[in-house]
Length: 409
Image 1 (cartoon, rainbow, N blue to C red):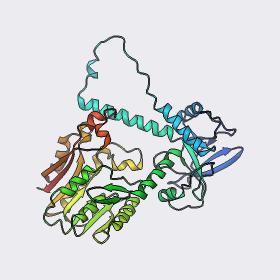
Image 2 (cartoon, rainbow, N blue to C red):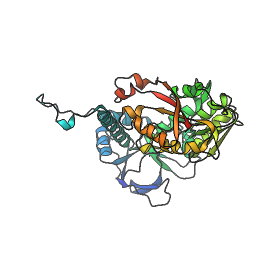
Image 3 (cartoon, rainbow, N blue to C red):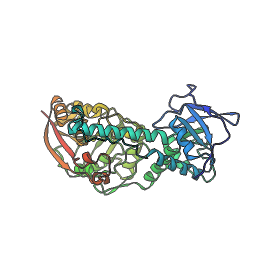
């Protein structure tokens, strides 16, 4: 593929402080100053921006993004996608590994335990992912004030963009081509939905709301015996798409209160529950963890991996310092009705990655005035669990997902 630099100058991107959520960026293009909103769920605007077109080479593009320059694509849209693919091949090239000439044993401090090895492998994997996302996220496209893209062979993305960003507000925007692909993908998932066998129906996730693609934890919730009194009232803490609340309603719980703080999740869950016919049984409320009152059943599926998220969507997977897990455990006893149960749905992947120990979690349970009444285990069936080429296969192959049934001591 032969692409070349456009005859325009590099411009400075900056935020004049007009909008903290969506800052303005400006750049110079053919002697004229251009301005647009910067839109991203996961990255800051590049320090410099260079308008380029079909004459810009992939090698030049790779050099530019590695230096921190954003490339504003002005050529054929499909050629822009090819450029992104060419960059991905360069980013994904394995680094050259130096092989020692002798077979001397590693120094003592390099011979570490399995947990340390797993943790270091995970951190390297995360660093590689972050670098890849940052570099590929520097290929940018401009959106007109009506959310269209004024490039040859550009698709009509207005519906997908409006679902993520809201209706047009009369201003132009700039976002990464990779993020646009995510918007379009989320739009398709929202249209067709995700089949949930345990529910016997489809859930339609919104952009930025975690999709219930892993079904093993939902099977646990669908099969575990309900505690006495749960048929009357249950809480679903951190509802997301509303799938757990829907499962509880399908199991005959007369009233479910589902909570979340994310406005997208609240709207998504509300729509899903109405579509499934559970609007009268389930009330979705904005709350930080628990709703008011007590219930015979309180369910929570917190993020499973205690490390910072690098994008908004990752907050459903990554929970820095196990903050949500510890908040759930710490507040559970005060929200359980007498004889009630708190269901904690957790994978032990973090334990196999050396990020958290079983003893730590059991200590938090005991400190919260709780004890484990029972535990139901299953193994994940998602493709990565059986893929030996996955960088985290050693941990994934041993992963167990559990439903912990907790009661007050």
